[in-house]
Image 1 (cartoon, rainbow, N blue to C red):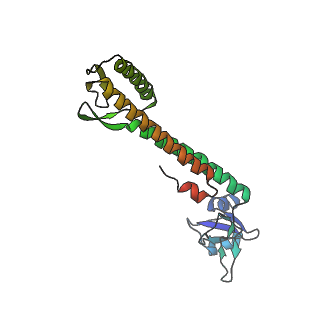
Image 2 (cartoon, rainbow, N blue to C red; image 1 turned 90 degrees about the vertical axis):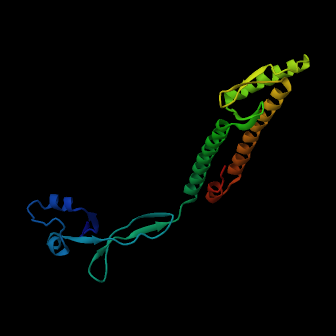
Image 3 (cartoon, rainbow, N blue to C red; image 1 turned 180 degrees about the horizontal axis):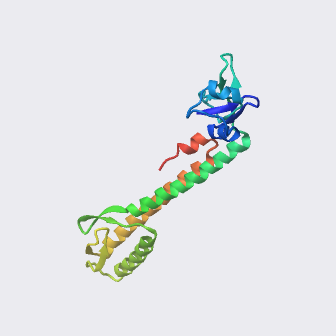
Length: 205
């Protein structure tokens, strides 16, 4: 329960009233009758209104003789709206980066040597995939057609692929990585183009 110092319309607490009146004998939840002689009154709550910025106002005494909490309401200033939009864009870009990295970590479902598996597509995997594709192209140029290239997917089962199969696998995985990047870039462009907060919030992976 809150109280108000009636002479100044200042909100106060029961602890503060006790400290200011150490000799007063007050109940655990004093009423107007108890604190009135000391210059205080019970401060009755009132429902907060809706608005951009809602802050506590100065208590007021109404026609029923009771004191009530009041509220101040205002719209965001242009500077506040600009900062909110900038903050929302920064947060959305981080959200997109996390979703992009999650997509990389999820990998590409792919049938490897006739068995379902997942080709991992994290940053370190991309470097490995590029190396494997180069090696496979060299072997193909040399006329190698046998399944001589070992490869492990997410299952960690080693399988052997032909140079052609390795080229197909690495091309698919690298294209998958590029598609993820493209999607993240498109979303970030949408973030940059957004002019209101609702447009930023609506952007999702």
